[in-house]
Length: 127
Image (cartoon, rainbow, N blue to C red):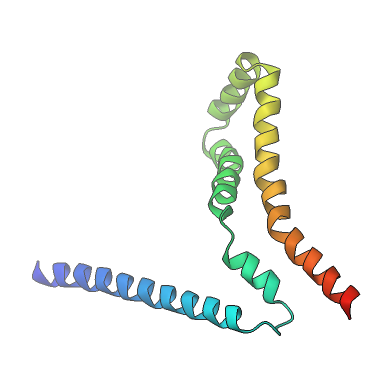
């Protein structure tokens, strides 16, 4: 019994040590990028590090992927679910939902990419 508890505690300890190492490596990489203005892909890497919308995109991706998994295990239930949604949700709600999803994927990606694109164009014009 003690050996199982020791294994579990050792695994938890290793997990937290690895999380600390990952956090330190990310902080070091961010500091390196902040100090190195001559790197060719500096703006792109910084935008990726500062991406605040990645969890919204991940969650919405899971929401759209879930029916593919569900239909494999319960095709009748998944089919009925989508029939009920189609019958009972008004068209304006469906369009609004799709617009919000497009915003999460499209606008947030543009928000991260456009500043570095504009900066790159400005640099090339100044040279």
